Image 1 (cartoon, one colour):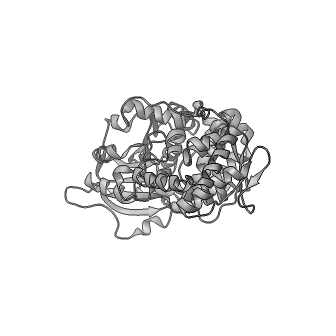
Image 2 (cartoon, one colour):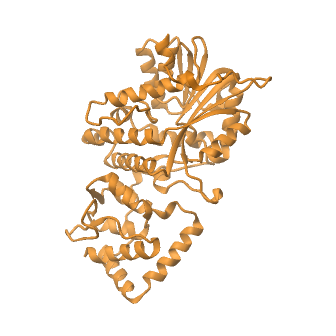
Image 3 (tube, one colour):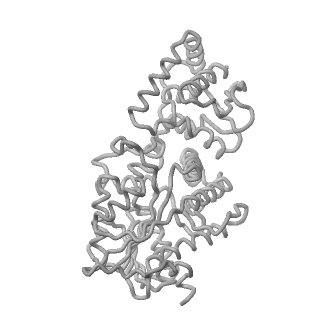
Length: 450
């Protein structure tokens, strides 16, 4: 049976995409096709094949995976790396139309028609099963309005604090760590904790935090940076998030650490903050939710909230540029199952928009490899406690997380995605930045010198 399905995929891959079918295929009856050396897609039933036939590419694969119709035998990272050239849905409509035209010309030959017919018969009659509905967010209202942004954030973050603690570890930091070397994934998580603490300290040093200053942490998550800055640098912190579950746990953590006199956690959108100015602003892993059309307004708001001479640390995932930015769309799997309404931008666009808002960009540091290591650590945590993770959420949600984190790790390793810390300053009226002439201030932790 598998030969018919594999023949269609092989012909499409070789003659349309220009590469041989990179992974093996095993169907529910045990028949196999494709390469035998390496990871294999396991189609557990006809539903998996119908999903792939009706929606070839990234979304069909993701739906089959989330539903449990599709599994992987072998190294998940290797499989994702091998199929990355096949996931062509991220290209613009023009590219996709051209690919479909080439595919039709290939698959309408007499032998291909017979192969396609056999594959359709194997899949069975009827439409594909409905997508895993419990994992698909329903969106209402204009994109990036206050109401819709809160719903999108809730979809991703309000899945249970215990689940996030299981994946992220005790630090509860949901952004890339700052590693000194290759991590040891077999330990209890201490290496990840050390790397996350190093990242928090790096942010504080770049912002040149000093006792008595006022820091705004936009998208504060579970309060980890706010607590670290208050405890080690003596600053007063306002942390804002639009996730109710994040805020509740962040307040509990602040109280348990005895930092309530220094840290305030609010459920508040950054556009609603009205008690400026702040000496420094951190935005760590939040700007991906802003949206391209509203990014300049985001930069304007942060510039207005900051004192002259104050610093902004904007930590943000980036994508590679495409030829026509107007046609760019988020990957369908990420948009529908992970980050609804999320948008990535090239780092050059981010820098330009920050400077258009009045900031002077003083430093850009790429942490691409650091995020790949962090994601692999999170996947290790998830896999080690899989049964517990399923109980805390659902089988579909746990599978979403495993796929999205593993695929993201491969993306960072392959340089299809990046992540950058952009340090910017709101200069004073005289043009002075207050920045030192050299970057030596980053060499040693200010908290260790205190």
